[in-house]
Image 1: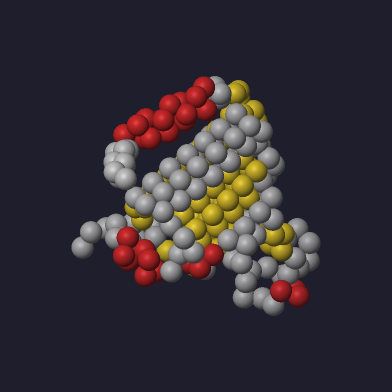
Image 2 (image 1 turned 90 degrees about the horizontal axis):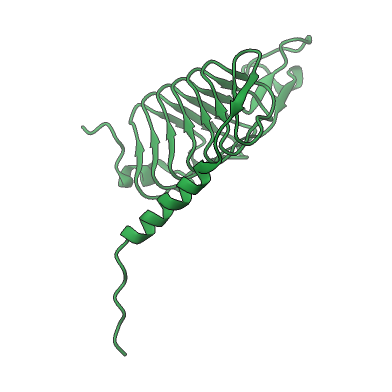
Length: 200
């Protein structure tokens, strides 16, 4: 058996929406499929887990999610176009209170817990290195770069390169990435066959 779901199988799974050329390994696990939408040219590698609540998980086009990643989207997660999550990246949009006297974990009734639930946004062209953790309420800015094993507790500005725990700024990415995107998209439109005009 092929390790990648066919388009017919993806439709049968019950995603909210998905585009063309979506490659998902059969070992991936999805929860709340009706709240998960995928763009086109998306690749999700082996053993990834995506769980969506009512606020949804929305993944754009030209996105790669590497092995053993986890996206826990009870508070809502948006991953925009051209993003990359490396191996074992974890995105949390909800988090228990580990400091006060509240009980923790989903086996306990909500009235005994204190859960922070906030959306996470990974903006266009952002990349997140292996083993990094993104906590609720964080926005990874346009074309920002998060180094491996980084704990991201606050927003990362556009084009900023960050790494570490505690997270620190290392520099800036080149905005030429936007020009390269424009050239890439133009090359795609030129490669599409033109429709022949019907004679009247």
